[in-house]
Length: 289
Image (cartoon, rainbow, N blue to C red; front, side):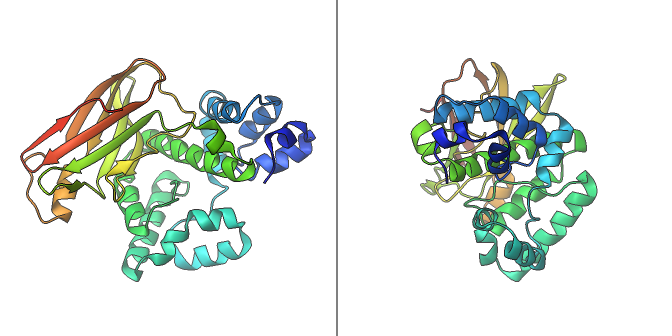
């Protein structure tokens, strides 16, 4: 771990070596080095996102994907973790807790994913179980090639920020930057959080609704990282779709609405919280804080 002042003062070669630990896209690394000195920890996060979303191409995204071990193949994970830095190992630690059936299904889904999209499945695995990642990959396998890469690149940048935080002392604590969009689902029929619910954020591209991010609610019914820190949506209308059918099926319930899609308008860079209160026959939403 280094301080921000040290990062600013490193030679170009030394800075590249450190930043490569966070993301292996050469364009991203070069532009980050050129953007020094960073004025603050918040500046690092904002510039990292700006470079990723504004300066990098589809080829740059795919290059960045090569910097990760494949998730879900037990033997592959064991072999790669033996030769990979602790950072990657810790990010995927919960996979080891999964049962054999889940791991095998995840390995099969990973192979199907790579065969379809021609790059490995990228997901910010921190805090996610293998079961949760299996649900996410199965949802993303339904995307076409043109759409999925934009979901994968969002996940890539979440990982990049996590690694930047491991590189630069006090980065996230000092910057205090959270996701531009967050959500929280509560099941009012049971009075409990709606956990393990798949949620997709969509935006308009070419006058069609396209997936931007796919997540799954945690035990508290929340997704705090719908978007990576520093990623700010441009003003416009967006949709958040909650997969209530799978949620009710997992809880042995029958629901009237197979999904809930909430459209909302983003006007600025302030925080937008999109909560959902559900029961099998109705739902309510409001702008949260």
